[in-house]
Length: 110
Image (cartoon, rainbow, N blue to C red):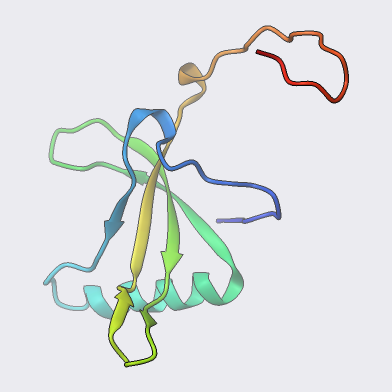
């Protein structure tokens, strides 16, 4: 697990994959473990870094589990469900170095 440092942002579309919300399955005991992990990570303001295999015989991905607690509005209606945002993280092979452009400080590079 790693802490979320101020200023660090997890991108909405890391590595070309969309972010999805992960909820517990109907397996005995999975809900208790799921909610315990969700509460603990949220209380400590941390994310979990995991190896994720979406289906049998599928390729493994490195993902971040970002906790989202349940949010209710003023009328006690659920606005956001409890769960984890599953964010795909890139492997080192997926990253490339961009050439540094020299510019005048305080101006934007086009």
